[in-house]
Length: 111
Length: 117
Image 1 (tube, helix red, strand yellow):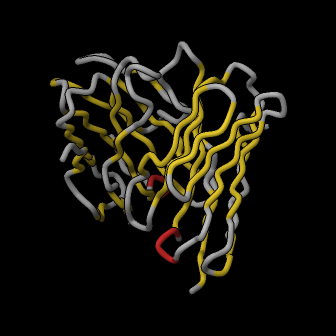
Image 2 (cartoon, one colour):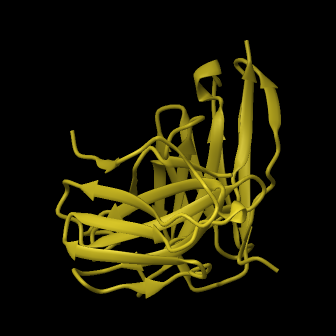
């Protein structure tokens, strides 16, 4: 079993829809949770990060962490075709600088 | 604009060749990483370095070596390229103290798509 599980998709939704992307994990020691966005033929870029549990909002994006369920989510409101990309979750423990990655979910926003 | 620069976007090499992939960062980051990315397998860590001349094996180091002679430069070497090393190679860097005070993120280069024929 992988430490971090993420559905690879693709997930296809119409423009304007609310998108929910998710990851589950097995290591209860994870404290830092991140979402990266990767456009085609580009490297991943950091989109959102959260420390421990709770929600964090940035414009149309909301990141949620539920440590009791070992489950993290990224919500995208009013989705746009420019949001079409692969979204990777990543997490780390306090004492380590290595990130543990999900496999990435390919998201397609249809105009 | 801070960045990580990978020397080549696309490379085609022959089986058995020695291949060098170069990565340079201008952010004074201590950590540097080499990943490969394959469909369905996600990012897999090959090697990382937390200081000049220091290196640590990642999850899939076989067939690869690295060199870090200067803080800003981290090179990945394929000693004898094979077709199963055809992949997207991504370099990343981060601060040593990754966390609330040190920043959370890795900064990635744009990748090198290597094809071994």
